[in-house]
Image 1 (cartoon, rainbow, N blue to C red):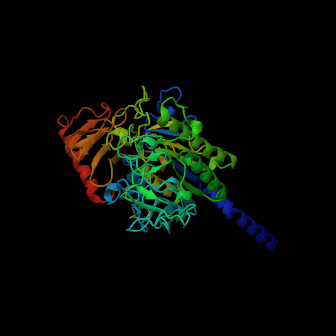
Image 2 (cartoon, helix red, strand yellow):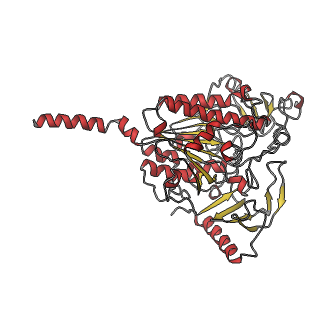
Image 3 (cartoon, rainbow, N blue to C red):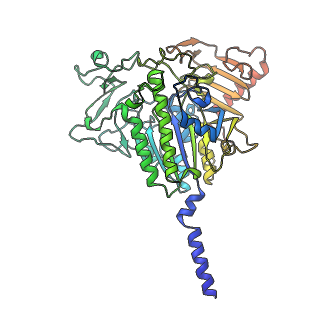
Length: 515
């Protein structure tokens, strides 16, 4: 009898502690980060154009939590991505401005990151899509050798990347530590100076371009589009712009299927809507808003394909999806792609002023949706959440205890992200434009402090070309009455103004803000 009980207990223990059951107890996590997507660019956030349809993203919002105060931490690519993965405001670290083509790794190995924390809990981790956080040591990437340190040195098991951003060279995929399909007989060279007098550029060969440039993007030509920076060689490794979205989806679905029996974290880092906006041919003309609208439709398709894979593999009920953007919208960002001419009455930044490059609300307040069919009740939330908080929140979800020094500006907002009744979001947030030593926004409740150390601000960035306008170093706004940040009320509220300035400076000086 005793031996029978021991056998029964052994069988029960084997089943209970099996890897599959342990995996089922921890949800999969997918973060879908759009690029330059504004608050008003999708249907569930009020997009008006009749042909600009985003049914798959809208379905996430309808079945999950749609945040009205969801933020990224900066109004440009690199600093937001840095903060998302490190849980640390980018203004705290040098080198977090817009990463150049030959830039070294911005996130150095050592400190805990979002993926490294999840690995401690047994997660498989991957980043697929745009990286734009540099590769390699202090001298930058060795394009013909091993590209390390990179994502795999900071907690990702797998990466399949566009190494910079697609308006910068080179147009190649990086799988793990190497450029994919690179022929050693045709080495890749990337540099800042023109490699030879006869090297074709967007200036010397402008007549050959299929998409003309408006400012700045006029160096090396690939696929009929001129880019920032110079490169030669690597022809077998180069991709076609139109195929980027398909490639991200294919590689993501392949990786999900390979890791379906483990808890996994996938960072799906879309390049849409960043310039050059080159949708696949099947999406061309679908939005009525030219190239910019067409890549929104393409982005929505990507979301639908990922969800379809989760449904097919019966993973949806055990997967948390977060949909967000790395910064607000921009119209003309260097190419003549009809974004301004075809904008019509569409308002990409919704009710806000500003957009990409700006610390006004339109620069960092973006679509932010959480979706988990078995756990989240559909709702709209006014709680303040930010992409920088996903590191601490996911660690809590996975049951990982945070070391004190880790993710110093990331708050555990898991309750708010899951729409739990009574759960609170942030009570304050620091916004920045780009890198270190730039301009700041500081929101606390309905008060918003703008601090323009440059004494200039970018406001007209969505419906017109980029424009800098003079600005006082400090200004105070009441967002409950002035969501467009037009009326400076610093003189009417001197105590609030003084307090907000002091609090912002204390946060900057403290080196951390997580309790």
